[in-house]
Image (cartoon, rainbow, N blue to C red; front, side):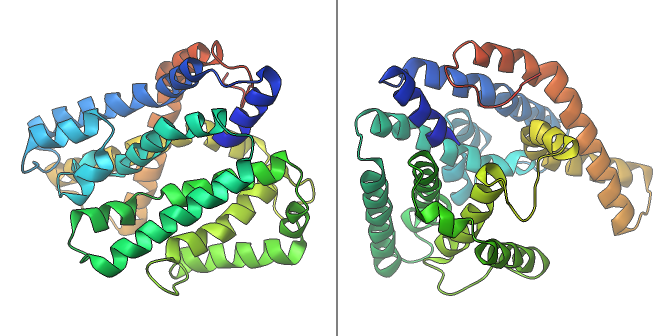
Length: 301
């Protein structure tokens, strides 16, 4: 989506406003990101979540959007462990708009970058051990997978004939079945080095169909899914915090609940907190973000 919006902006203005791009990312990502880190520090102080071996080192990685590095160095803060992927995302954003701004041969450049990253990753896999920090870094830093998403964006943007293959119902069905299999059992596995990329192909097919194909097998365009989409970032950043709070509360009260009850409590609370967060915290910043948007992506109201 980010790549597609940047392509539309460049087409509309003959350039990409880097300042506005980064301001949009700041207003969208930073408020909740830092808010949950502050909450986590309070929970650590109250002994509700586990202590970390070196809090100052952990904070350094989280504050400067290197949570993925902190994660592989065993310096993750438990209640915001999922924020490692925000680190990957922000690192991707550091370079991506500059590449788009400086080239017009999008598909060729994207494919070359993907292959170069894959070659580099393969070299690391065969020369370093899994315990190596560099090995772990490339195992969790999915820049090549994000580049695959960018390739999907240019296929849609350029109205490539490949899109018609992706839109075929049998291709969609295979992709959905693989997703279902991955959810119910495990992600498909061929070879560890390239498993993420292979799975990403099928998930990219699903994303392209549900977002751009009028004849998609399964439409996600409805009020419920639109609502979930709006609060999805909140669900993502709060769910681990809610899990720790529920666990701590049940322990203090000495309540014994079955797994289904605990799951439902966590699901309801996470949805409620994410909804309140969207209305009270995110929406004001999203309105500020819209002031710097040339191409509108979603309705933030």
